[in-house]
Each structure stands twice: as structure tokens, then as C-alpha cells.
Length: 122
Image (cartoon, rainbow, N blue to C red):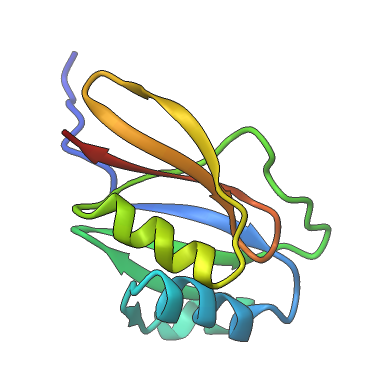
């Protein structure tokens, strides 16, 4: 092969029209991901972008939105128990899952019903 992959630049999570404020509260305030400005030529599409480690999380507006119930991003965190408690305090339902390959994990849903996984390497 003449090419190789060096990583993932971003993931995109779909959300319904008009949900930017709710996305900012959940991804920005609750999860603590810093928001970054969208490029000028993409602002008219709506949505918002956040930084997650060295990658980006793009919340994209989808007119015919339907949440993803199976497909999901897996976010690694340093203090999984602390994040779990923060999400539970905010009223988010947590689904426990068995650890895999030295990682503890759980699932929850964003305000739009998209499935999210959070993992910590042990």
C-alpha cells in the first residue's frame, strides 16, 4: 500500500435541528470538552465542534435526525468513576458493561439519544 493511516481527526455525531444550545450544555459543560469555532464556510450548516484530547467531536445538524442506538464513539477518560458520578448527578442513565482488555467502561446517551461509551484503561 502506498498510504497509511495516522489517526482520526474527528468524529461526527448527528443531532436534530435547533439543538446547538443543548449540545453545548452536554458536551461542553457536562463532559467538559472545550468548544472550538467552526470554519466560516461551514457555520451556516449549524452544529458545533468540540475538542476531545487531540481529536475533535463535531455535532452536526441532521434535518431527518434519528439517534444512533448501536453505533457509538468510545471516549477514553482518566477518571471514569468521577465522570460516571457527574453524569448520574445530571440525571443521565448509565449502563454498566463488563470490562474488556484491561478497560473498564460504561454507556450512556446524549440528550438526543445517541449512544456514547466511556472507557478507562486499568
